[in-house]
Image 1 (spheres, one colour):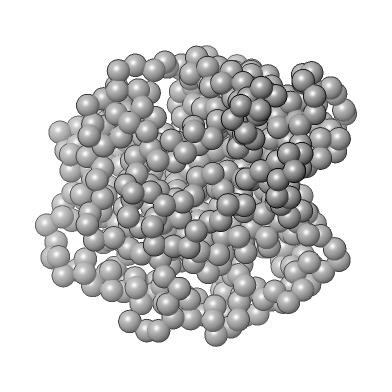
Image 2 (cartoon, one colour; image 1 turned 60 degrees about the vertical axis):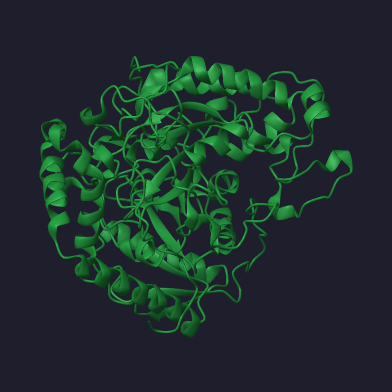
Length: 554
């Protein structure tokens, strides 16, 4: 179905604020006026009736204009979650008491008095958000969707939540992850388009909450496709930024040197708005200090439009990348390629560099280094993950030389990836979001949603996964990965904005039957002893991967 389009008057405000404002200022105050592509939708163009169905940029526009109060938006999201999350199961826990306090503070900050006293509020102020159950929030439970961490209370805030909280965002709750992010199924959660279908993983709860319109924004992690697979099968948008663009401090790890914190929204504008407030250097995560600054304006939010907005842009189509697609999703991928050409883009055949052969060993080693602290609780893991964790811990006895060899192979791969872009003069590569169509929901590896994804985690390059329609065979959404050069999130966002402007598949929403659920609630309590914010031993190793734009062979 399409979201409701009849107009209603939202909560009365004390005057109309500047809806078309940039990330760093107010046009009404005579300050620097930001470029058109960095503005919010005009208030009068917003016709959605239910606050829970607003996109993030639409809600931000109304909040900034004081036509919508953060408390009204929050209550709409809580009501929708309570009425429909029974069969979906996207939430681990929600925090109504905490969220209502944050919403009231955000409302004060957005009020005329707040603006006069403190200046313009950040554009995400008052927006609800779901955090994957790996992100620490001081004094709140953090369990990685696992019995292993039952009763665990975060000792501090993850850097990402600290930044978002300081920007005035409202924490709805923690969304399910595949246990400890160890798989690509998230079996606790059903796909809102068909709850018998897989939601993908490991950020499956975040994607499901977005698709179901329980929250306008969510945060996930991606170690090998973990935000891209769920985004693809749920019909939402994700941005896996360059490795090091967002801090992983205070996030339960899977593999420190491949974990990417990413932004998720219904549209790329939504995800870009969120990423603008997540990204940046962090003294607690040294790799975040190595890349170029994001810039005060953040990332673009609006397409330029026109008949040929992609003219002059070159898109690489990797050989054999679509060979394993089922017929229905192959047709959607072909249609997407046709859209790129229609908008003026040029598609060129390319060959991606081969993946390092030691990949699995590297994953096991880093996972084992983290999970060895829980060897007395192996019986509390899911059976499949218990075996995986046991093997990972055992891998720690392997030769150190194997790890050094893998690190060198990864550096070789990264430079080969960069060289591909340079030699073929590419602006992006195009890769199917998944190779599955309607994978059934389940707990074993046979029910994991998979596809070509490791290329982006090994290279550290950014990727936008954008909706590309729904399968004629199953009705499940299908997405396309648009990957770029390291540190070029802004360029990728600009490309995706044009594609979504031409085909706004992200506006499609599932019809949700009534499915009430008494979602577990929690309140703040005494923080865990730490010292890590996760209240586990999550400190990364001294040897860290760094994202580079170098092209010379190692």
